Length: 348
Image (tube, rainbow, N blue to C red; front, top):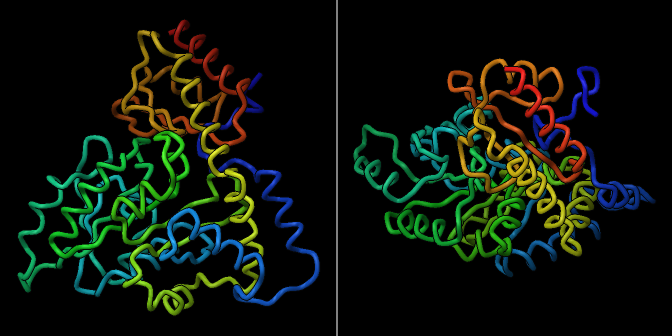
């Protein structure tokens, strides 16, 4: 049972460990030597698996972290006088320390949203500056899948946004740090919510889904791929011992491990929701469509629960916290959080 000295973790899926199959794949890749910089059999196998998931014209490049992947991905799509339209809550806007603006010299234009998701109606009014030489020129729309609010874009929503973006000569970038969770929730393939929906460049995350440390830049629009090898190197994301990163992807993309991990995390989030449903002092701030739950709680309950479990306060003014589950979250941990929530509220 969690307590103040051994709190259960619901702060982030980044806190989770490494899936045993991924760790085994790394250990297997450590036997003997292999060519550096991607000229190895693990990277070749990884590339085959990515093409299977995203289409024959897609190209994948392993990266060390999501910020680096986002910066390199955006660099394929932008000139220094251009701008990125994104939700105000977007990770590139709030949690990457201005990396895109610093290293690419471009402007981010954050757009307020109700649920972390952009629509064509959000984008089109901001394109009136196209051609006006005194304004940064919007050229990329960046969305997150899953959004930072835990909500998911459906294939139809992405396709509608892509159509609107492309019709004005812009490009669509997707930060897919939790793409696996979205696909598991929507019951669709990775390709359906990326390639087939009109995404041009994708950042695909594995670290939150059982990897030790593995992200990928996936170029879905072949016309943008020409400079990727050079910009990855210049962006400090080229791994010399690439086999160890690629091996993690091979493990996750083999026999649907990525999906199983994400589906379990999502199921644990749903278990939390079911467990606190009906409590009069608990309400959900956003729909639960992935592995994140955003309940609104009384202030006294937040303070006491943080003594027993690790989690972040999302919106202090409104009493909204964030509980995140992972592939290794157990039913027992979830049930302890539910029980403690009920107990703390009863003491109110």
